[in-house]
Image (cartoon, rainbow, N blue to C red; front, side):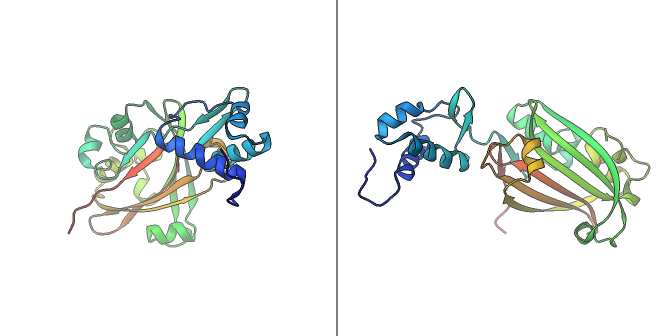
Length: 253
């Protein structure tokens, strides 16, 4: 029951109790919460108070509302992105690099839509790729799906001098992907750097990823370098935060 003497708004107390029950597993992932009427009776509060509590939990990304059905506990991250092995040559040799490696690890069916275009490097791309502003770039714009659900947007940019005449400028890059084609052309990859952030999505991103209100996105910018330190690709990724878990591992040097 709500304590009306502690100075905490009633809707926050209701939200806190439901939040604790979700964390404890009393309300399991995918389970429907009690109806609005039942919550009113349980907490002895008004309907507006219950609605405000649910709105808070929805904004936090803990629950989702389905029109005509009710409110459900949002499932936890379902895609495990393991940075340690997903870009290895061994994975690419089995055609299990990057997103395909995620699929193999979690058992979902991957699919990708690809658009190819060419553009001039802006200031940011030029800095990451160490090329002059205005350099022609090949852009691979991808929408990635897991079992038909859009989970990631990815835009790769590479200096066109490295991609001209290769399958990197085709929708289907072939086994091993763009990195395998780079190495076949003599650009041996030596290292990667990833910059990870988080923010709320833009309207177009929320639409493509079919995000519920209040769900943030994870942003990852990866730069691939050759063995002599030349940056050859910048990949900007946008991941639905409620569908991904990122894992990193490194030795204790």
